[in-house]
Amino acid sequence: MSHHIVELKELRHIYPDGTVALDGVTFTITHGESVGIIGANGAGKSTLLLHLNGYLVPTSGEISIGHTPITKETLPEIRRTVGLVFQDPDDQLFMPTVFDDVAFGPFNLGLSGAAVEERVTSALAKVDAGHLREKPPYHLSGGEKKRVAIATVLSMEPDILVMDEPTNGLDPFARRQLMGLMKEFHHTKIFTSHDLDMVMELCDRVIVLGHGRVRADGAPAEIFSNQQLLTECRLEKPLSMQGCPVCGK
Amino acid sequence: MASIDGAILDFKRLDLLASGDTGLHRLDARAKVLVTAVFVLLVISHDRYELSALFPFFIFPAAMIAAGNLPFSYIARKILLLCPFVIVVGIFNPLIDRTIMLQAGPLAISGGWLSFFSIIIRSILTVGSAFILLALTGFPGVCQALEQLGMPRPFAVQLLFLYRYIFVLTEEGGRAARARQLRSCGNKGMGIKSFGTLIGHLLLRTWQRAERVHIAMLSRGFDGSFHSGRRSSFGRRELFFVAGWSLVLIFMRTTNLTQIIGSIVTGRLN
Image (cartoon, rainbow over all chains, first blue to last red; front, side, top):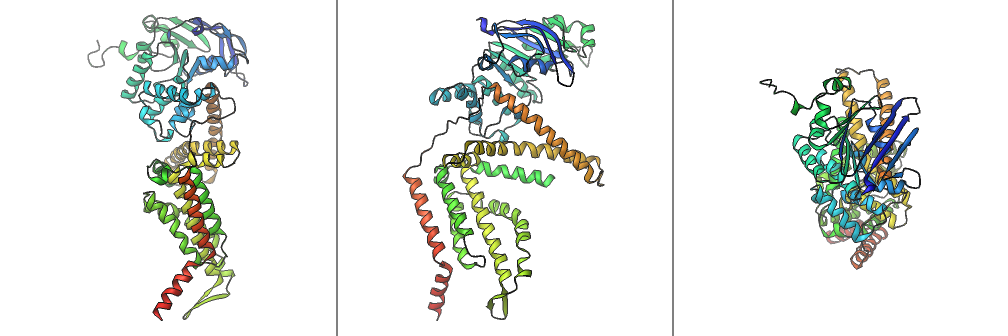
């Protein structure tokens, strides 16, 4: 299943205003890995994600998905392979109803009629949002919006799921629900987050970004016990690894 | 601003009404759009001093509200919201046009007053029928119908986007205005100047959002054309609806029903 491999070589991105957002990022993510990308605000996480489906073009360096380099010709295929879920679901849900939104991707893939219907139904069922299908997006709660936003990407049956701050702004119940959902997605998962407990629970690998560079890359337990690294990168241990606030143990 | 916020929230209710399940709701959107268009055209085609001939036209909105099971007071409130604007449009008529057109006992009514009330009645009828159309069909349905009736696709898409993001934008604007208000401690803040930058920021944010929405569309394979899975058919029921209402409305336009009823009633009295 080589088409699930994400390979970055010396990726650099400099914004037109001169800001160096990524400064030589190199890593390989293989099939089925669940990777959390963490780092301080402005460390380059979002810029990195936007490269993964070819929205941003690197200033220098290489990026390939499943051994296919991202070029103008390969973009449609890359975008089907890599499903990108945005931080703000209002950016992701732009069609008049939930159904239209979830069907948007499949229609663009050239499917029609019953095939689209099937994809939509199954994607909505996966996120437990079948009952919302006829609703307009602005009538949904934050958690519902987030789940539907994920369904809009799942309906394209991506091989790699990329999410920007998936648990941001969700209540504890909705957060748990979303984490359960992500556990069920067995292909490659990549997400950025400040929710370190979620990263601890869902990821088998953590990449720490700092000032546009990879500061560390390894197992969560190993990364989160390196206090010096965490302090330098403006991070801290997940709450589950810290002592009890009452007894201190 | 808070009240605009509230008005928008209230506006969302119109959308919820569109998910109703009466015979009228199930009717193909094109039929409803066509009849509403005929209605609006006929209402505005009346002479500027016409008043009595307009009253029978209230049958159409009344019938739609009843058959579509819509809340009358809600629709009435929505129309009232527009009344100040309408009054401003017509308010100078009575001052400018003072020719006496009607003598009701000792009361002389000038042409200006007649045209003023005519404007108000017409606005209530046309705006009301538009609200009713939305409440029975929903905005996406209306857009799709317009497109099927020949409106260019880009316009329909523009309208849909406008409708989708107007809620997001007002909420954003509402939040910004609230933040300004809370920090101006009951004073005028920095006056009109602060509103200038506020609106500028709103514009920039809208821009950024548009960019993000575009990325979201591209990520899902958008190639410039919109597809829709919705199917609806213009069947016999729709044909009857359009033909029936058009005939009734055209009949009302060509004959002054109020006058006929009036003369029947007065004839009997004599």
